[in-house]
Amino acid sequence: MINLIGDAIAQLALPLAFLYATGSIKLASTLAGVTLMTQLVLSLPLAAVSDRLPRRRIVFAGYLVEGICLTVLGWLLLGGFANFVLVTLVGIMRGGASQFGVAASSGYVPQLLGRDAMLKFNSRVETIEGVAAIGGPSISGGDSGIIRWSVRRIYPRPVVVC
Image (cartoon, rainbow, N blue to C red):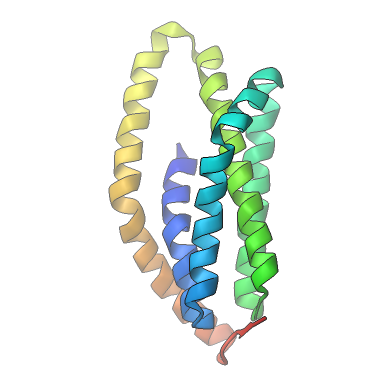
């Protein structure tokens, strides 16, 4: 559930932070585009693979890799070095790991909860998805302001884009 809100925030806040720090629309749009495109292209193949593997481990590993990718992107941003190729590769890895975790969790949750609790679970998921769709961009706008302030405090010169 927290992943839905976090994804909605990160999907907008990270490209905005890279845009502000680097001034490169190309870098910011590439980061957003490769993440979403990877999720779109790999959605069905990763769902088929996750059905054949232990789902619990895939859910944990997928979200762990996504967290590592977000940490690397933050280091690149705050470290002052935004390499176009590296940002693209990390964005692709984040999109694939996120989609792998989502695909596995959609098969794992029914096994975990059972039939009786699924109706209540699905209604909660729909509510949280709605909140994430509405609140995610609003929160990420505030987050990008905080990130902008932090970047300027830590690294007052423009970030070098290679």
